[in-house]
Image 1 (tube, rainbow, N blue to C red):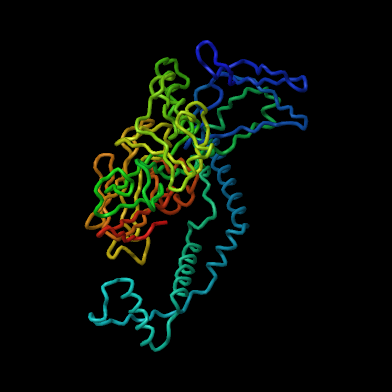
Image 2: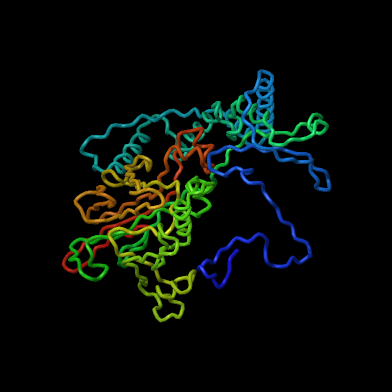
Length: 506
């Protein structure tokens, strides 16, 4: 429970045997759990439940705790019974799925007639008529081909619709087109028989033999929260046309003190924040649970306290000493152009330090002017790096097919929880390019260009089996789910004191 003021040791959280407040109804119920009787809840592990008889008054059958017994190897009869039970469960799921809306939709798609369209031959244009722009040339070829064809072909919209319908029919006819994936049916019969045979309850024969306690098929405990995209943190005050997710550079800048005079635009790419409970479910605190290693317990206790850190904190929790705070160098609050700097709702770093949780004022944002940002909170245990997918990465920076892209993936340096944020540096250049130098990702942009970039968190393939967010899709088809945020940047050119905008990204 939380106590105020802190005790003599400075603790604000203490463990008490019973709540100190008096119950409203005069009754107070205290539950006790036998030590080592409950399993640790961890992502990716499967758990089975034992169903006991309960009457209408809420009374369950007698339960007598017994010491753990060594596993018993099941015999042929137990294996046969386990296989039969798993088969019955699978048949029940198949009947349920077959009678649902998803199955009816799949049957209707499979029965839909295929399109009888004929492909319109592409007319070869003379080189003199080509502009060099792939989009313009492709459009011109299509118009000429339709004009010279004997029969006019379908429109571009109809062609795309027919392609989607054909793909849907292929998926509907696929044997892997089941509406749901049930990982609990992957349980090995021998393991299930061994689990059901070794009872953790000792009941009298007159209660156990007539109605044997039922053990459910093990189900995996999966993570349902998606992995968020990286956090974009400005290194310096934003210039004209900039936002945290919009970077702008200008040609001919002289590296002056003003935001519009810088020759580069920089952002820190920090791993998304996670809670202590999420990190514990990922198994990252197991070294301090169920052990008597005081040093390890103290170390991980300090790590757990880092959950409260934010990017607005001038002093952040130490990862090595529970009572220490580390100062964040280079942190400052800045105001957007046009913000009301006289508003009483504007905050200062001192205000936030004195009153944790105080929001910043309208138009305020935080900057961290350092080469390497120190992550002030617990990073997401599944986010292992950053993915930059460059839209319009080919000449002339506008590809008709947006999935034909160039991608760069960069892992975060360090290990959890000391993952080091990356630094994105946008600079002027003769051509669009990207390079990684340590923890710095340098991107060059030609004058007058603007490029959209999809920013996402990368996830290790081994962690996908522990994730339920998109897991059925990934298990059926090799798709790597990530949380994505679009970032754009543009380059503006200066000439003779006049500014030519290259466009603002959205």
